[in-house]
Each structure stands twice: as structure tokens, then as C-alpha cells.
Image 1 (cartoon, one colour):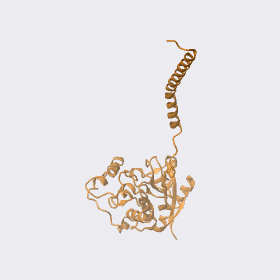
Image 2 (image 1 turned 45 degrees about the vertical axis):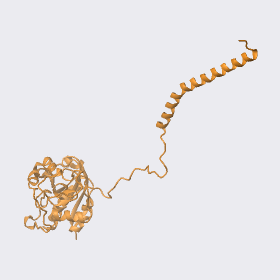
Image 3 (image 1 turned 180 degrees about the vertical axis):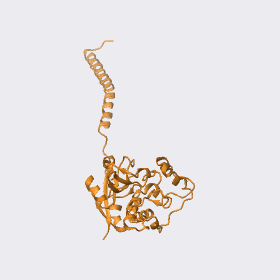
Length: 292
């Protein structure tokens, strides 16, 4: 069939147009996957901002205004225990842990079934020796089963037990037992729930027991001088010889043998220690005298 020059030119332009559109389409198909990858990478690197009104600030950490005894063999109860222990024939995990960490308290743990709380009016006057500080363990069955904080005095009450030794020794008042001091600490806010005994039990609470506290520098001559003057010294200690976390001990005297320690958790620690043996574990310390 014959085609004019005009028809030939028109058909040629049409073929060219069709060929150009196909090329563009193919080119787009080649580019799209790469573009998709670029868009995905953009959103990974630059995530969208939160909607207005969203709180992106982390919640504030709870804080106690005074340092607290943050747990040790005797101050830490398992975190799942949020209420006071129930006196039944079942042993709590914390009580079993006490027996595991301190075989010296095995008798206390064994007697836990059916135990009752101590009478806060107990009087230990007849047991006192003039001029000496009494030695109390926190897991003594006479008060160790009393509830204190998130556990019992037996494993959380090193602070009240140490202060009781100081108070009874200086005042001669046998009613200031660990149970009495622990009850005061809970009532007056010196017991930090879930943590232990706040340092303020010694710097402030001790005054309610007829004592005058004095914070001391961590310097051997000063501590030795206080003890030689008959003023007992309470130490807060961190991880080391006495504890895995935090603990209270009492220094009663200093002589050629060293510094004599009363540890309410382990009787086997109650002997003379050299200053170099434990001073690096001390976090704070106070001496005490009778209030005028």
C-alpha cells in the first residue's frame, strides 16, 4: 500500500513517541526499589517526633533525704516480699537466706515456726554489767521475730540492735532493747521501707534515748581518742569483712590489741581488729555520750 510522505513522517513520530514512553517506564521501574530503600533508611535514621503532649522525660528517681542502710546479710529481704511476714510454719526466702549466710543464726531460723513478737516492755537490767556494753544479736529470739521494715529484726535490724547496745550501756536502762529501739525507728520514720535503717536514727533518733551523738572524721587518732574516753563509736560499713552491702557495727574500746568490735549479725566477728583491716569499709561514724 502506498503511503504519502506525510503519513510516513507521522508514523515515524508515533513510533518514536511510543519508544520514548516505554523507556521512561522501564527507567522508573529500575529506580523505584532504590528509592524505597532510601525512604526506609530515612525513617530509621530520623524517627518521627512524638505527638504533642507526649511525656518523653524519664520518671524521676525516688530519693531518700538521708543515706540508709541499703541491705546486707541482715538488711536485705527478697524484692518480691512487699508486706510484713506472716507467722506460720512456712519459712520465708529471706529467713532461709539468713540461715545460709550465717550458720550462727541457725537456731533462730529453726525456731521461727510459731514464733511470736516480743513484749516491748521487756527489761534487761539484771543482765547488765557495770562499765561494760552489752552484746545483743539482732536475731536473738527475744526480739528477732518482731517485724521491722520489710522483714524482721532478725535480718533487717542491725541498726536498732547496735543503738540499743549503746543506749543500754550508757544509760543503764534495760528497757531500751532492740525491740524498743526498732519500734521507735519505725514510728518516727528512721526505718526506710525496703532499704533499712537511715543514718538519722543515730544522728537524731539517739537523742530521744538520752544520748548525745557526735559525727566523727574517718581518722584513726580521733576514733581511738573517743574510745579511750569511754565514748562508744557506731560505724556504718560497706562491702567487706562484715557485709555484702551495708551494715552497722559498734566499737567499744581501743587498746594495744586493736579496735574491739561488736557485730550484731555475727558473734564470730566480735574481737579486736586492726585499723587497717576495716577502716577502708567505713562510710560514716558517730560517738555517743549521755545527754546532760
